[in-house]
Image (cartoon, rainbow, N blue to C red; front, side, top):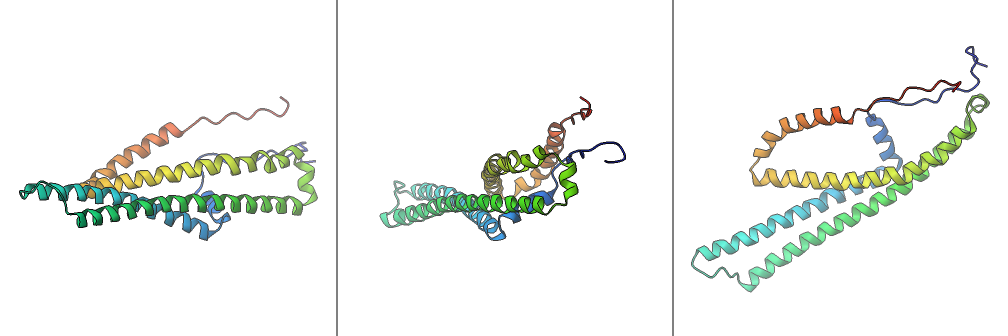
Length: 215
């Protein structure tokens, strides 16, 4: 028995923002190679999609230039095939990048689930007897049931949505910055500062009061 008379230890809980070490631990649990492959595929796929949009704009601009020179705006079959071929290749590479990202992230989820489950099992089996004396069995079972389910389902789904949304946002910012010749970069810093202050205010939630043990 502890000096306070409690036979069961209180469950620890982190409060506040999630530390970057947690994200790093989760990412490395699935393997550095898969993380690198997912990031390279995501950025390469988004770059190809963005390149296809700019190439299509160049294609249309070129037709307008030819029309202004006195022609009817028609491009020769050879040049049309060149424009069409490169546009198709860029979009195909964009699709391959998305597929590669999805496959790499799916494999990463499986590796994370296997690795973390094995580490939890190893920690519980190697824990001293005193740990099992003061820790309820239900708390241990929660690590293998609800917590692992959260890692396998909710967290992995949220991570996939985050990566997809991040790639879309980055692509839009790069495209606008290129179209405005870098003017967006000057205006982006104060906007990001205001957005950071706003999300810190709206993301903060009150911490629930601890219920007394006799209740």
